[in-house]
Length: 101
Image (cartoon, rainbow, N blue to C red):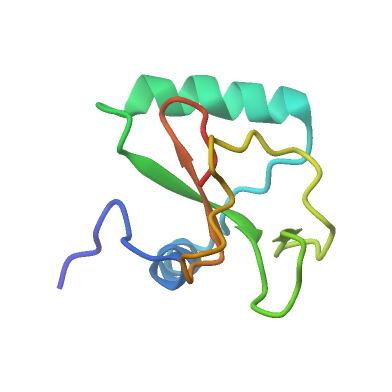
């Protein structure tokens, strides 16, 4: 079975990276956020395309963390109404418009 280019959930994204001996991207500064936003905008064909990062919220924690470092996420550009606490997902997905969901 071929590997999907864009996994549809966080664990599938982690697995895809591991298969390629990589890990999900950790955005650790405003400059990195701006560079990634520019790169994502160049790849995405619409504002509904999302890209997984290593930022995650563990179910019982109130803060998002960078899974690769365990540090609290300090650089986020939340979209209107986000983070959405009514939905049971805990990964950070970055869209073409630089909005984090």
